[in-house]
Image (cartoon, rainbow, N blue to C red; front, side):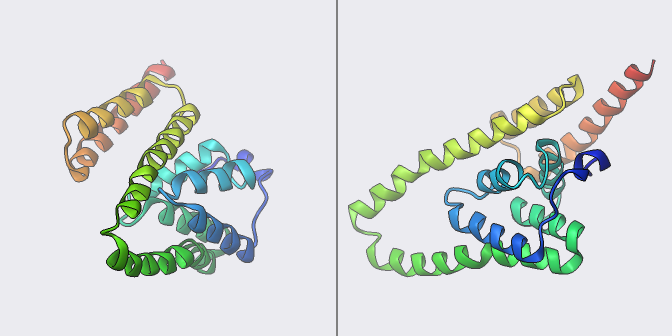
Length: 190
């Protein structure tokens, strides 16, 4: 995970701070919480560096469930054990759960109105822009090696061009990325 030197200067949030900040991530995370979680953890609170966030996100993607929930669980557990993992997940899902239940009632009652459909249609490009912006920031923080760029391009082609299912992409990309990384390390050692 993170290097010891990178984590020395990072503030260590209390359980309450974890809960409170993940509540805000969940509350503000319309269109996806990853951009909000990244901004909170990296830019605002400086709990982790860009690289550490990328490592947390990469690790979180290998487990079932939402990536940012997994990031919160891993980060919270690293700092405060099981209580840390618990408060991040509870904070992250508290308001979105309430809002989603209420939105379900509203959807059932008012979805047939054109104005409601227009509002939801207008939000889609914003959510897409947030995800693209976060992706570009993640790319910027990614170590600039041929192995990393090759793994990124391979993953993109398999997902976006060939539209393979996620499990297939992971079965192909994980061994390929490891092989590329080992080959790159061997060349650097020589």
